[in-house]
Length: 237
Image 1 (tube, one colour):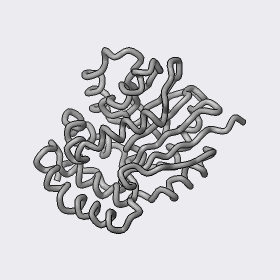
Image 2 (image 1 turned 180 degrees about the horizontal axis):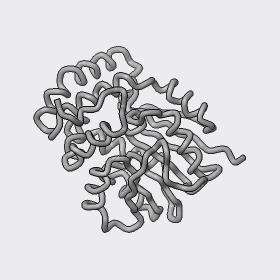
Image 3 (image 1 turned 135 degrees about the vertical axis):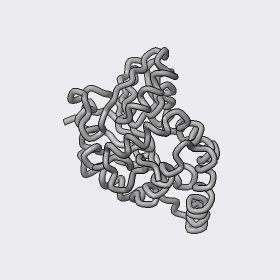
Image 4 (image 1 turned 180 degrees about the vertical axis):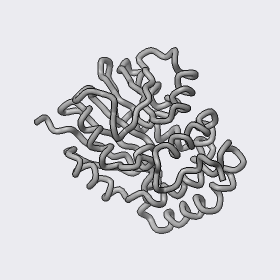
């Protein structure tokens, strides 16, 4: 087992080290394991945010920056934040030349930004890796301007029993085998699979977002509920 095989205790140093270890091949592996759906989920997230020129957007768990670059094409100013130094370094290597994208090492539970600094805060496939997701949701609220938007894209739970059974079979039997053939750290993907199973459903995550102080909380499923987009707004007062 890799020394950077994190467990569901989600110790920040172990999770960060795990992502450091897989940074170089992370995007390619995700595309293979998701059967190409990761790109569709990124497009759906960008469309839901509908970024505009002049907006300031914080893209957390940005990884190598693919989502941040997509958002910046609108002319918005995007801060790509991730708590993995390896991911940030890989993102700078690949996309350091892209206008309007800045890479910053950032812990979602203690963001290094001022109150109300961003028009939009988004996090894709990263909230479930945070040691205290509820604390992170409160931090995201703090750094968002009044009236600003939160967009969370995260793995979820298919509601159709037959599809849910097929999805479990893929995660339990097929994904581990494929991960061992394409990833530099297959143990990392064992952890990621376990974290998906352990993550709450759409309704529960919506309640967490609401409890953190966000309003107008709503979600919609992607790919039959394998993934869900959660959207919310910071109150004006």
